[in-house]
Amino acid sequence: MSLQKIFQKLKSAEVADSWLMHTSVMQHIVKEGLLVFNYLAPKTRLCQRVKAGSLGKGNSIHPSAIIDYDHVIIGDSCVIGKNVVIEKNTIIGDQVTIEEGVVIGSEGFELRRAAGQIIPVVHLGGVIIHDNVRIGSHTCIDKSSFSEYTEIGASSIILADVEIGHNVKIGQHVTIAESTMIGGYSRIANGVNIGRRCSLSDSLSLGEGVVIPDGVVLTREIKST
Amino acid sequence: MRLSGILPETTKIIRDGTFSSLGTLFSRQPDHVVYATRDSDVAKIRENPSITCVITTPALASAISPNIGTVVDPDPRHAFFILQAALVNNHEFVLKPFPRRIAPSAKIHPSAVLPASSVSLGKDVIIEKNVVIHEQTIIEEGSIVRSNSIIGSVPAISTDATENILIQPAGGVYLHRDVDIHANTNISRSIFKGYTELGEQTKIDNLDTIGQGTTIGKRCLICAGVTIGDEADIGNDAWIGPNVILEDQIRIGNNVYITLGSRVCQDIADDKVVKDNFAIDRKRFKKIIRGM
Image (cartoon, rainbow over all chains, first blue to last red; front, side):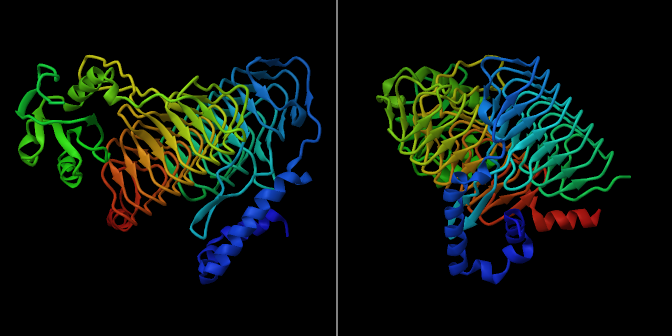
């Protein structure tokens, strides 16, 4: 059983709300376990997915962009704007445009309440951005927590101020408009169109070709029509 | 200092009073002056014993208790910020500058911009790429500020009046132990002599905006895209979902759970789960939806 499956099991309602998890002994076990994991995980090889970085031809990268070149793979003909931050374990395809102030591969928002404290879960994953993707300014794309990558499919367009949570998988030809927040572990199929300032709950799945208008709060999955 | 003599000409003094600082409805510094525009503000003034003067509308003036100095203005917020602008050059109304203190174990990325003075970073603080930190910022041990965030930006005050007010902040930002601020977040510094405060172990996700003078309690989780208005007061252990908007000068209790996409425009008591545009109780919301 992979680490991710163990964590998803612990997160599920039947385990998280059971009386056993609320006993003080179990709370301390969870707390100490997470602290040990957070201490050891970054020291292991699990944390190094992209062993050696590479940079393709014909890229236009602004000098103020901060990129961890040793652990980032960038394809050909990409445009990377001012003040962009690209953290390690990121893979970027060809002809990708990244506008100003974008942060790719920062820590996800996975936190556990245990024994009266909040313990963060250290993220070990990375981000894959496929070919022909355009990412608007100030967008944040979090890295995945364990095994899978946060993925953005080919020819997708993401506009400004969008937040894409950890382990989200976005298909091809997807459009996401400004100020939309997409919760962690979501699955968005090909050809989906999401409007401005939508709020998507975590672990959702949207079927192929779904259109979501502006300002929608979505808490349940939508199948393709 | 007395109210008479320093306020703009549009104001009418009903009862004169003395004060030594400016503040919010929730702040605890002694003898401070506040402004009140809503009916619910009157009860908050009654609960806070450290308020000695109020600038308010003519309609609310009769509800203010007689031991509090009262001034009436058609636009109380505008008059209050004119008062702030007039007093910000007086050293008694501004936080004292202090030399730069940075612990040796603090990790600061070379691209981060820190002020030359009045900044304090504790043990094991991590400041990531392109972070901008303004003056009067105190960050306690173990806190992390992630890429492209801005701590202590100068808030823009817009009032209904046609005149723009140039604001010079008198306060700062205080991040307690183990606070985690994710990427592209903006925290405004307090414009009063005090701090915008984030309690121990509070975690703030990407793209959030926190208004000036706001106080957030311990162990709060604030998701992405949240906009918190000026001078709000949030209790401990709150959970605020993505894309939530909190209005100015409201109080959120302990253990409150605000679901995603809500717009909160009134106070919320302890242990409540609220949702939707008017932040109504979840059980009531379900009843209304079923009744449609």
